[in-house]
Length: 229
Image (cartoon, rainbow, N blue to C red; front, side):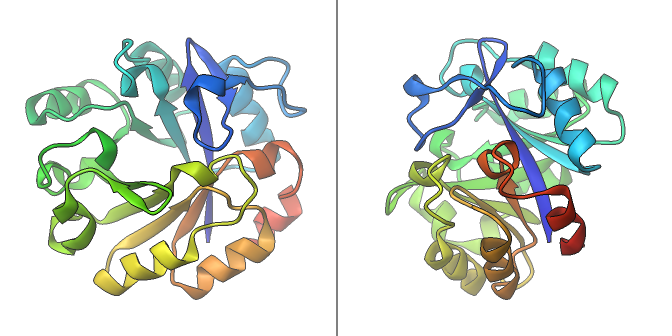
C-alpha cells in the first residue's frame, strides 16, 4: 500500500485543500515545512518518509490561469529519486505529448477536463487517468467512467468533495472501479484519514492513496507509513 503525498499548487505556493472548494484554498501551514514554497513542503514530506512519488495538482493550469511547469521542473531537478504525477488540465493530445516530452513527470489526465475519452489510453505509460467525481456526479465523458478499455494502467478515483474533509475514502466508487477492471492499479483520492482507511483500501486491492491533510496533521506518522510496506 503506497502513500502518495499531494501538493496542491496555486499561485506558486502549496495550498491546503478543503472539500474540493478551490476558491477557498489558502497557503498551507504545516509543521513539516518552514513555508508554503513547493520545495520546502516537498522536502518536509521527504524528511517524514522517503516517498517514491508525489501527486501535483496544478490548480492554475486546471482552471486556465497558466501552468506551473517551472515549479514541476524545479521539483523534479531537486528530487530526482521521486516520480511526479501532474494534473494540469491538459486535454489536447498533441499538447499532452509535447508536455510529456518536455518534463520529467507523468501526466494525470483528469476526467473533468476531458472531451476525448480515449486520450489517457492513447498516451500510454506516461499517463495516469483520474476519474473525477463531485458527490455522486461523474465529471467528464460518461464512457470514461464505465469502459475500462479506455483506462491506462494507473487510475485514480478522485472524490473532490472529500478532499481535505476527513470524511473517509469513497469505498463504493473504488469497489465499482475495481469491478470494472481487475488488472488496473487503482489509487484512492479524497478523505483518506489514516491507517484504518488504508487497510480498508488494501482490502479492495487498491494500490495506494493520495494524501495530504493526514500527513500534515500528524494522523499518519512515519511509523504508520513504514508499517504499510
